Length: 94
Image 1 (cartoon, rainbow, N blue to C red):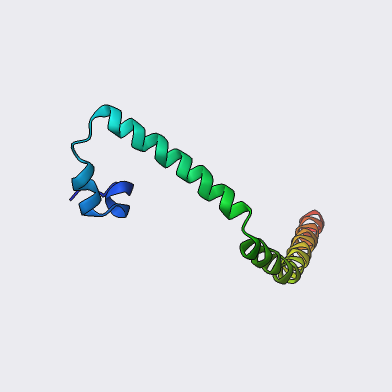
Image 2 (cartoon, helix red, strand yellow):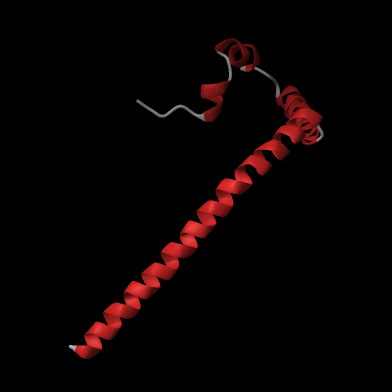
């Protein structure tokens, strides 16, 4: 069984059937229309007040976790370096 393409996963069968026999010119017009629709949606998403406010809330809530994770990673890095130094020192003694 072959793997489905992205459009096969997303588009409805009726949309595909209705557009299966488009002329090249009509397909190009729809292609351009879809490109402009994507640009409009991206612009709308970037300028959506509620979405941007929610992103700021997530960023604020996440900052505490990010700082704590960064701190723990720094401790791990330091401790691994200390272990490595002890191992090197023990090899020199042996």
